[in-house]
Length: 147
Image (tube, rainbow, N blue to C red):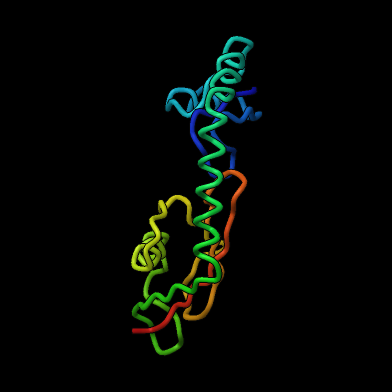
C-alpha cells in the first residue's frame, strides 16, 4: 500500500514523501492518526501543488538548517551525570539532556531531531546526529562525565 506522509516519521520518511507500507500499518495506524493519506491520483495532485507552492519556504528552511549546522560546527557538549565506580551511569542519556546542553550554548533544537546511534549508558565520548532537515544532517560530540 502506498501512502503520502503528512508528518516526518523517523525511520519511515519525511513530510510529502510517498512510501510503501504494509496495508495494516497504513489503514490502522498512519491514516487514523493523521500521519498519512492514501496515495491516489487526486491526493498526489494536491501534494504536488502544495510542494510547488511551498518550494520557496522549503529552500529557506534548508538554508536555515545549513546555517545552524555551520554555527554548531565541531561543538562538544558535556553532560554530567551520576555514575558508579565502574563507569556505568545510573539510567541513560536522553535527547532532552542533549537539547538542554545545546540550549545552554545558544542553539534551539527540537528533541526529536537528536538521534543516538546506540543507547548511552557509560561515561565517555560519543557522536550524536542532529537531523536538522531532510537534506541537512550534522554530527556533534557528546562527552559524558561523572558528577
